[in-house]
Length: 409
Image (cartoon, rainbow, N blue to C red):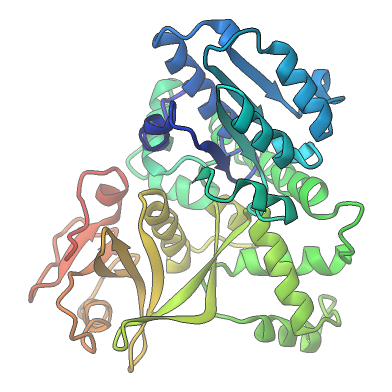
């Protein structure tokens, strides 16, 4: 059973018949193939003939032989019988060597609307990518956000408890995990996804990666996602730690491994925004996990009061909704996020519960150095509205469910 992923379809739909290559990227098992299926269903309802819809899943053994640009070109051309428009769907195309050549050729010579998916963020950034410059539009697909998760649970007949947010904080939004009930089965599934990505997308034959070092760095970064550290901090930790985790590693290698994690969609790397200077700083200060479940399987304890889990969910939600997101730097400290959309922005603090006056003052007080008049918002799990002095308080669940929009100016 499928929920309609309208948040993505609404963005892609306008390009169905526009002469740009539609590229869907994102971590494995996030649901890219399912979105392709939904696009195909919409095209059929629009009256497109089945023989003008060509679908190739390169992880299907039936198509294993189509592993080069020339073989892909020959196969597709053999299926095109007339001058009418064809809709071409190429799923997990990174398995085809020099695929850009075929796509560029088909775009130039055939009446095709082309859709491709891939599980590598640098899918179109290699040497061959110059063939496609200005010819693509990219959509990053995430695992289910909180609203999609609740909708899917209802669709499959599962009860959505009032405290479902804590289940989501812990186990995240990979679609197939919601078909499992026991936590041990969910954990096993997420670990299989995680290990499979490392084996298939990172530890490739020519990667020159030291497996133990990479796995150690990857687990550490995901377990601490949202915390502020640099490649130097990570290298120092592993070079000085006085236990079995000690490994000799330099800053350059750590930076390289962070890049590999980003390419495989394990993490998003977040830059800082100098609020007073109104400029983006070049240094990358934080990494957030693409899905909170990846954090859980790499840490021994899920502390729900650890706001980094909540920050991670809010960050991902903002990205999915089309915001540019930065961490905010002030002369006194930092604000969790600066969110920008359509040239308007707001400042965001994320809190678990604001249980006393000190917590309230601390969270809202983070905005005190900011002279910018843009809205200042605290997101927390509190149900009582704690807005005051022009600063806004929004319940996290209400925000995630789309019941409340962020004010911007």
